[in-house]
Length: 266
Image 1 (cartoon, rainbow, N blue to C red):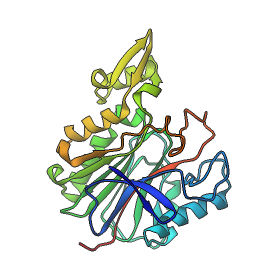
Image 2 (cartoon, one colour; image 1 turned 90 degrees about the vertical axis):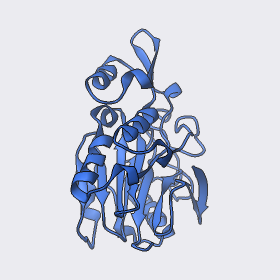
Image 3 (cartoon, helix red, strand yellow; image 1 turned 120 degrees about the vertical axis):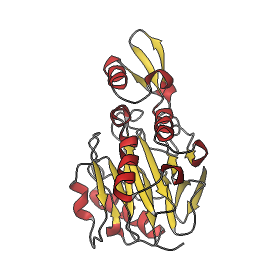
Image 4 (tube, rainbow, N blue to C red; image 1 turned 180 degrees about the vertical axis):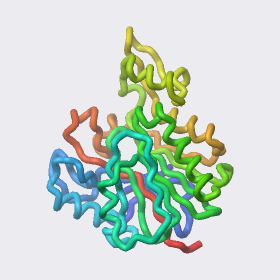
């Protein structure tokens, strides 16, 4: 996955992006927010000035020739609810209060996204049926199998074939920077997050946790070809110049976005 500049902003873009699709993972650069939210903070739930966040969101949308009101994000709560948008909506702003951690749509002309600052943004695209999904995967979502649930919803609601799907796992906190305790371990052991494959015990009751690897394993378990999954290798916590990081910045930070939209053209 490469870091590509689009006007003022730069984004990591999946290799499978083709004509008619805009998808990627924003960096923190190219906006108007002041420290500690500098500069392309897209998170409406932060303590940044609302005017700055709205200006940044407008910059992102207009970079991809989209009116700002057609950028759809939701109220993420680390749950397993999935928002399905399968009808035309002239104004998507009301969805910002919907509690959900994944969005699926077949609607062209809009952009869906999930906001992150250490959690992993996951994008899924069906080039055959023209279906897009954006998933917010923190440790709770990973342990609960949100990625598999989203793929299941794409299959049941839109008749997607997992073999056709393309996915991208965006930047998140690396395992070397992410220590977790027994409650997190227990959640994975009781869930579907592949605990043994993604964890390393480094001291009594402390494990390094690789959520990015869990995302990839869950995508493959859902039927995706491993060659159809792109990943961003950079760690949000390590690369201050590129990313916001909730853990590094002790909660006072902005949010980047994983986004995908279709314009209806091949």
